Length: 478
Image 1 (cartoon, one colour):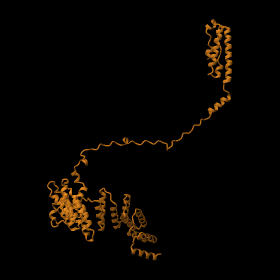
Image 2 (cartoon, helix red, strand yellow; image 1 turned 135 degrees about the vertical axis):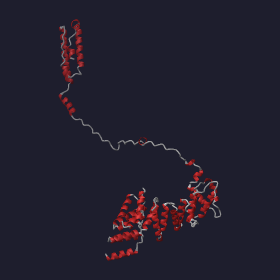
Image 3 (cartoon, rainbow, N blue to C red; image 1 turned 90 degrees about the vertical axis):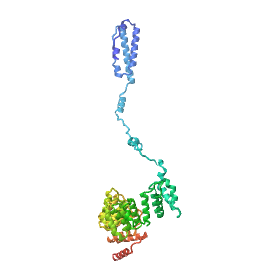
């Protein structure tokens, strides 16, 4: 601004311009200065020099007069538009005060957006394609293939045969099914006829199968073994004198069926003879036949000797392959014969075969160790059974309560009695008697009376001798 005002007047204006034109120029410059100086602070406007050189004296005087008028007008405007000291202090105080910001709210867990669920096609590996080689659909199989293996159809044939009048032959029913039968189909029909108590119809079915020529149904060891077992179980197999001739040539399935039939009929001597002839001829039968025979002969004390001999023969077998129920049955016979070492051997073999013992097997081994006087080992097996999450049954509770009484721990036995009730079982008389004897030995007669009242309230009949002896002890020791 100062440069514009202090710039000298051009020579063309100084000599050759009239005074009126010069005055109009000066007035326009003053007006422009006032209008353009509103945006400047008051101090800068006050310091604008209004000097300039001019060739004429009149023009110089008029220019100075215009500059003075401009300065006066600027001072008046500064007085009207300027800030006072109080206003400046008030504005400074506003800016000096700290600005209070509103604190941010933490995110609410209710409104928090959950993470997206994993998408199966991104988290799972692609499934391998299913091989479709040698796939046989049931709908594409022939009707005869479905009939010859369908248990409902084969059992239905047996029911139709059983419904025939006595004078009719089985061919009346079987001739209608002969196009759909194959080898081995009628074995289930023969066994079902045996369950119905019809050994004669079973023999007729075997003879009809032997006579078929169009559809070869015989020779077949499956139907022959089923017929031999049914006939032997009903004492219709008349070949006791020919056992020595037929054992060397008979198949293993037929020999096992013959022995099972004799055992089912109670002919232990004939079953033992079959086993002896098989051993002499170096024929190996399944160990389950030995288990069935051991269980049968050990039912009476007269058969304990034969059971012990069969146990020794079974122990010599290198391929001891027993089902869990057969193994448990043999263990029970060993406990009855006081062959506790055999029980431990069978139990070790069963666990070594990567199979889990059942609650019945655990109960049998615990009972065996209790009978042998190894109560602490039996209690350790109880803990192992509980860690295996075995669901206890009533015989298991009975054996464990008796074990706790033998360990002189009636409180533990009472806890198992409470668990027995919670499981929905009703305590039997021997359980109450064992627990009462345990508390009587410990001298806790009040607990004995409580158990006697509880047993009588539930209708359990206790041993009269035990109750009378407890009454005498109670009267002698009030």
